[in-house]
Length: 442
Image 1 (cartoon, rainbow, N blue to C red):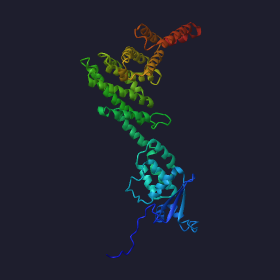
Image 2 (image 1 turned 90 degrees about the vertical axis):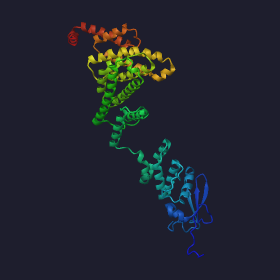
Image 3 (image 1 turned 135 degrees about the vertical axis):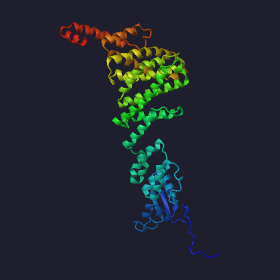
């Protein structure tokens, strides 16, 4: 056997006292003092702090044992991270080993120590790991507190949290609104509902400003999507309205499709209200109202049919709010027409829903919202009070003669009408106001 020209290099292992030439003392203010037997070759190569401390240029390098023992002071909360970092100095970190970090918190703690002591290889490895893995909410908050103080070397970690440019926001909004107003297969309904929720969230002003400020192009795109939805709903409505049998609505497929359209229309109202472009929707709904009511009045009052009626009332409620509170200004004839169509329908439908609601199971199916009825009643009153006095009198007379006068309760409108009528009569008898009243009545 031929002798070796050079001695085989012995691998350095942390904690091996027989080969160690330097001791790292980890010390805390609480008095903890742990010794780690290390190797200067490893420490100097991979860490600037140890390279400086073990350098000939360090001021105390000539003091006895100063080069054989290096003190590192740390907080008790960071102690384990210091130990882990020193162990990592002994591992070749070249991106081929990914399971060194044991979670986000541990990697973040090691990163802090690596930045403090100047360990570029470990910093890079920590940054690459944290940038690549998912974070829990608490971990994300901790990252936001710590990482921005680390400068450019840790910047990649924050890439997923940076504000998105407006162009990217618009692109995702347009794609989402197209999908949210489409009619995908039933198995994609959950995805569609999620898209609808996020679109509404993007436009909502809460603790933060809306993610998207809609311009004319965005509004045009939304209108186009809504028009396509209207078109599909209208095709379904015409088919049911002109059907040869009254059972057409109550076939399972028709019920599900019609209910889906109504749910989408109810949701899209929220978007249109936020974008302040409700007029076209209101006008379409008014034009289609008589057909919608006729279709919904077909057949018996099963739970499924009542649910569809309720969804139609939800849409109507949003339309009436836009009319009643001046968001969409309509002439008297149209405001009176909407009352004549929907007031009788709501008046008859509510008792039917209330009776079914006595059954807890069916009540859940109908998802009854007490605020809906209260809001709808207030809106009816507002629309009635904005009509000419003679038209108000006709509506109130019909209400007083109706067996379903309990809802909507138009007492407030009746009281205001009586007061206004009495005052109007007094004003007419006042000499200075007679010509004014005559002009208004002509």
